[in-house]
Length: 184
Image (cartoon, rainbow, N blue to C red; front, side, top):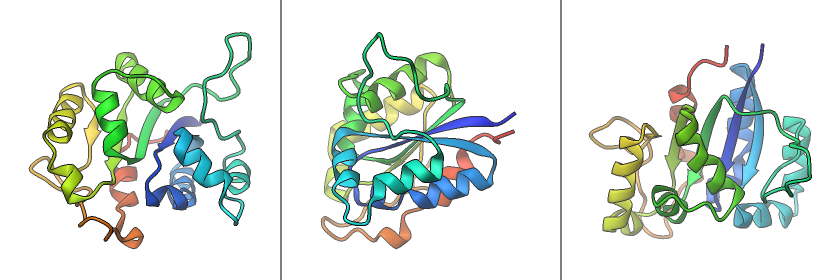
């Protein structure tokens, strides 16, 4: 039996490379569904290389970014685990506050209550990471059982970069995938 992983991506530069974690998760046995924040969806839709089409083809599922109507059927299988990557400071702070104004936030907020395994791999700069709300939100989500992968006392993970100095080649997708439970 294949287990389902929801890859929930926010609008940060690593979202332009979602094929990397999708392929790796599939290789590990996961059925992957991509859910994007509205801004990340806009980025993918406007990508001249047809990123949305590639994500649909690779996963075999629609790429979701907005709530469905109550009368519409669910087009995705239920998740067994959630990977939130890249996680922006905006989504982090809304999530910790319990805000569900987008499909992505609704799923990860609900995921805590459902007891799903949730791994979050941030992507923000050191100035954003220094804000008290970010530190508070990371602590609250960890207390709720979310594995937030920052390179700190809790283990290896994302190291915030200097403003406008992010390097996509060093985003630690493997660390996030290794933190997930086994797919089978």
